[in-house]
Length: 189
Image (cartoon, rainbow, N blue to C red):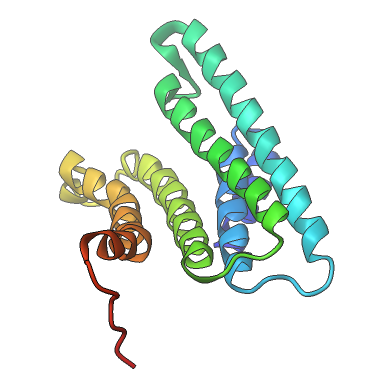
């Protein structure tokens, strides 16, 4: 996924397209999700700080592009609606805030570490599938049923549905069990 994101950036630059953020964001989310589980041993803190700053730059430029898209006809920029740009920029801003918390804490443990890994990997996959599905609609050699709106919506929303399920399973379900029981939860070995 990291190689795919960086390859998308390279192809966009080679073709002279302005939209290079999708591939870079996918690579960012997957790399930071990966380092949540396997922290970098050597210059790990410096890399975390650099990636945190990168997230803030992506968020700021994303919001700037979203506001520029609002001023254009159809509220779109390169075919991307301003609402989607605001959504992505907000998610990247939240990722930057999460990076600040991680840099301050120095080391995440337990469910926080797993949750960081899960949401970043799933969101990176969401960006990748969204980019693919945007192209799928235009592919005439694909069967018509595959280019239909229900199939595209199911495939596009799949990573987000999985993200919500696993975040509930990892973080919320455990917290609710502690609130809803009067006695301590017995763990099975």
